Image 1 (cartoon, rainbow, N blue to C red):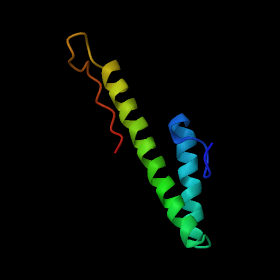
Image 2 (image 1 turned 45 degrees about the vertical axis):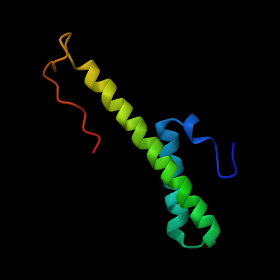
Image 3 (image 1 turned 135 degrees about the vertical axis):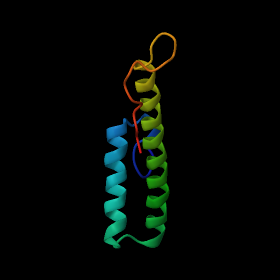
Image 4 (image 1 turned 45 degrees about the horizontal axis):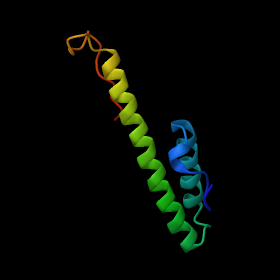
Length: 82
């Protein structure tokens, strides 16, 4: 565990999303000192990238599931994370 929370790489998508929501909530209050705000913003960006990577990996897995043996889609539409 580092100073601001657990290692991001070890977090599940849901844990990282909750941590990101906590960061946003703290920053929105405006009651956090400047240096802590900068640290929180940096951690929030790391959490956002982690969540996006998890979503991207899920999209690839879903697309593989719905592809036939020849690699063509079997009728399902690809997952749209955006």
